[in-house]
Length: 259
Image (cartoon, rainbow, N blue to C red; front, side, top):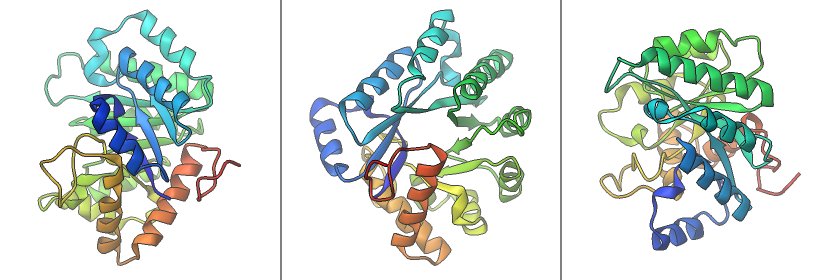
């Protein structure tokens, strides 16, 4: 059994979604929200399908589109047992740095919710790794499990995050020829620090780059990690599955059976 720990199912057509769900019928998906509308969609997916869990949150690119009701709605969802984390949240300075203080404020407010409800935190960090690190460090002793989605930093920075207990989501980027840093991180660090993800429908791995991504393509991520680390694909799948079950406190065993 594989677990795609990060995907966005609300961006498929009805026919596409039928195929996605069929391909993943023996596997697990953790669906991510980014705003009020997609968070509600995540909750609906979770309640409709037994093999879907969710994380809900306010993405840094959405911080200027929210109000106090957004946090009320978000907090109301955290008592649902199928919601296993807050995400994807974080910092993104790629397009603008004019609202960095607001991004930090919203990020921290959501971490506080994760602390209150004992949820894992899925982080989006783009061109903002140092600020992300500085904020996470404040919670070092609060037993919050942080996951850096689509980590693209250096090995040295990854080791600093590991000291804070952070795990790393590895997706289709690791199959790209120019993804030197991502490959170096995968090669350098033990498998216990990684989760498989796709970020579907984005970041499609080779050999299907350029097409719409889907959660089942997580198999190609596992294959690339196995190649880089000189392991069997089954070893990578088994260990990353165990990692995901532990980190998100999923009520299943490594075969997908309820416990």
